[in-house]
Length: 309
View 1 (cartoon, rainbow, N blue to C red):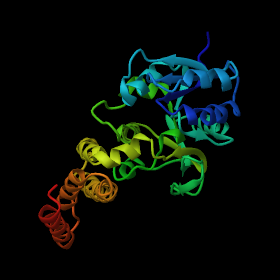
View 2 (cartoon, one colour):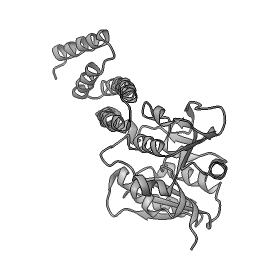
View 3 (cartoon, rainbow, N blue to C red):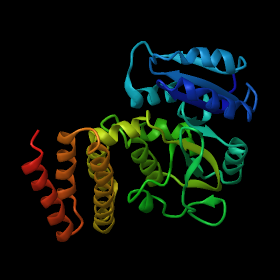
């Protein structure tokens, strides 16, 4: 059997109430069974995503369920292993694509055969699908990005639903880093950018959903997002080939760590004093200047004196 052109692999875990939108956004652009594989990879959810696939998949969407919960990185790896297409699109079960996504992607690979991955701009949306943010414009026209690696090691410019990757890339440089719990996608895209040319589409054609039950929101309270950013910083710095780029990467990640520590502090202050103190320690450690460090030390002392419980 000839290899399919593209595999749309939909990893999901306990977001069945959003999965219908994800599936329908793909089926609206269905290229046909000969060209496109569509499959939901369920990480042993408790909310019955298989029923959503049966009800809304129109017989076109396959379903695979893990025997036990393997967590999201291994679920992504399973999705990649099961992909039959030349090009792989990992589309989280709570995200979705906009009209023209797959047509634009295939055109980019045809027009620029040197690229091994391609991404579009994206929207961040809330649980209701309202746009809350648009990703920045990387360049004015569709085409191949120049020196994108030096940018991607300083910030996350790609959200997973917006990128497609040639299967050969994963086969050559490996898949997602299992030591990361939240930033594995950022590291993956940086690694690809280091080794291969990447294409870029200026139109926002994918939607990344941010909602209260997402893993991103949950990691804000516990602080796992900051701990994983610290792990990521070390890995990205090792990817850099020059001292100048390593320093640029370190300074940028330290800034991002501080910004997330502030968000964590605010979120935790509403629910857990012990976690609030933990986040304050991170604010002190990664404060960008002496004045900021002193300010947060004073807050910590005040908490210790007046809120010991």
